Length: 103
Image (cartoon, rainbow, N blue to C red; front, side):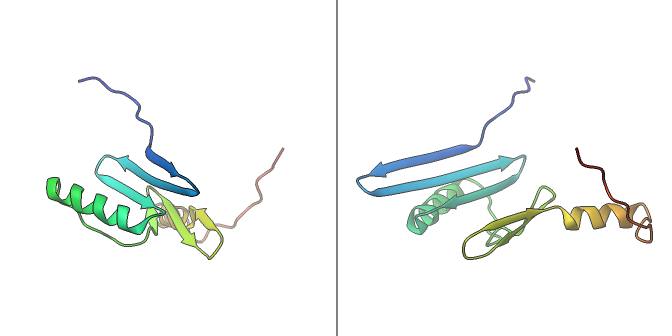
């Protein structure tokens, strides 16, 4: 069995002034699909659903240890939940924080 590194799959089409962007990110059995054209995204999900068992979890909120928070003009990624889960797992929630030196 050969191991290899894959890159995210993206499809970018341009027709006049219209730019269509569709992105598929895959990690083992977790998939993120996004597009700036909702009808294309819906069609793509339908096509994938005909071949594979899919669960649509709605808007992205958590993926591979990253929390995603959307606002009207930005996307914020953080690992707050992951960090808190680690602290709980190792019974370190009562530890005192310290600053991290930055170069």
